[in-house]
Image (cartoon, rainbow, N blue to C red; front, side, top):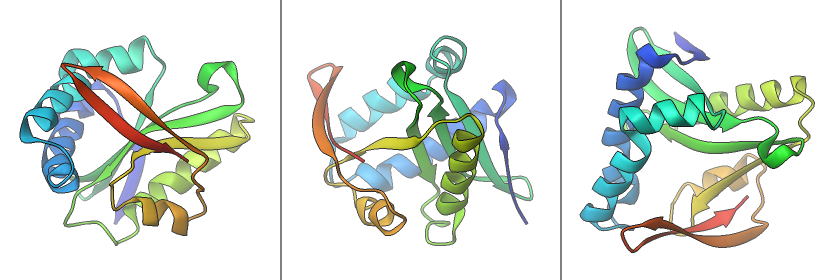
Amino acid sequence: MLTIYPASAADYPTIQQIAHTTWPTTFGEILSPVQIEYMLDWMYSLPALQEQVEKKGHRFLLAKEEKEGLGFLSYQLFYQGNPVTKIHKIYVLPTTQGKGVGKHLLELTSEIALEAKNTTLTLNVNRYNKAIEFYKKIGFEIIGQENIDVGQGFLMEDYIL
């Protein structure tokens, strides 16, 4: 049975494992192995996760079946002081994709946003990521694009949805 709950610091190893399992499949044809390794460390090291939660106000939801982590989503309410919920990350294990886990994570985030009186959900997605079709299917629309310098000469080339 699928359960989704707010992640705590004790769940960081599971979040890291999901990220390290998902990224090579998701970005292997888009980014170099060096960039994938750099970005995994930049976003998913223990200090990076602690900073996201403790200083930036990100919240993580973790999806599990039995004791196995299947996916996670991180979000931030009132992004940049507006009634906007920013989805910073959403990843589901490749073996679990297509089984509704991502949709459930997004639905729960939408409910949390509405309870907080946020009126908009937004996220960025790599312009070459196949997940764009998933986001469109559930109602997101491309409203812009941006390139984000993440250091070491690497860019995130994203659509804004």
